[in-house]
Length: 412
Image (cartoon, rainbow, N blue to C red; front, side, top):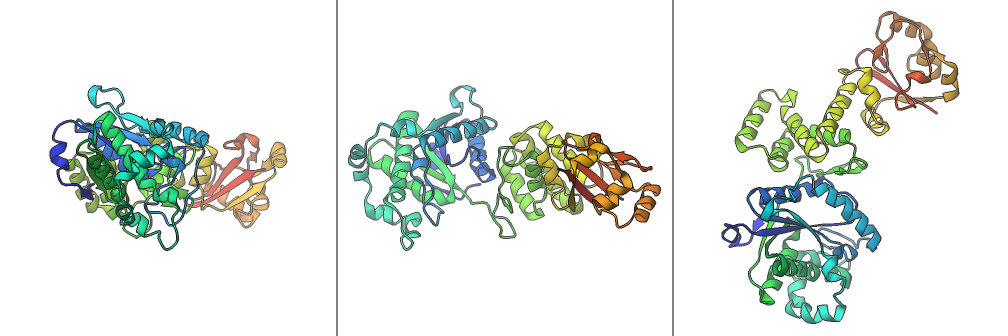
């Protein structure tokens, strides 16, 4: 999990120390791209150190040019406070905030920047770092042609002061982050040295890349979030379950706390029968439970089983509307009138005239006679009447012929 490490870091951390990672408050949820950094803090705490999560209430108002090709939107204080509250709740699922000297702590850099006026900042901080030093950073050089505002140019000074403040007030000696943060982190260690506080160190982690070259943590619909309102537990579970063998072998080392020997055994077992996807299932289960809950994992598993014909109508009825649409995303769909359902619709009419799921009444009756038609996962062997009582989530109906032919009906 280590990409770069400043000489002397391991010796400095041979005894309990504090280390911090900064999180961007641009949303009220973290996404799985943040999980690498969260796991680094988890390992830090398990090793006896004190993890500090800095949520950038002040820097969120400025913007970080690292890894960015253009200026980003700036946030107001109300938006940032809302986002910080959401992220805090997520970090509390991973870190222990009540375990003595190495209890985790969350800090907001707005607390020490809100009363820091511009003249004091450029006098007390700016004079220690030259423009030449700041211009040499890749995050700045990459933006010189397209343009970079003074606001974003000054970001590394602001982040450097965060490290200085935490070093002075929290005895924090190491900053950690993604490899794209190396320049900003080193600026912090340099500022601490030049302002005469003491020594400080830097550690970065590799940026996660998928084996196929596509971006980790992204789907066609956008980020995979830790908040279930943004990414449902079913979608979250499926993201990990769909990992390639090569990616799953990498992810299980980074995102779980399984011991090395267990991981090696699991990888070996997986490659004896790759079709069973043991590695992906173990990975998806572990992360879904830790990010969400055991119950959310069980529901996600049930939802997955529904799609592959291994579940019941009771499981289907437990699905939220969001999960229902996620599970049956690629399934043919049609709409029917809620008024018609009030009166009741004959099953054959539902299969043929109302939905065009089956091509003819003759075909529909033969399928019913063969006992190959299901409504909401329940087999039907007679021409029953479908009404509102059959709806799942008060608006959906799942029709099925055989094991694989599915059709989702929405009542409007």
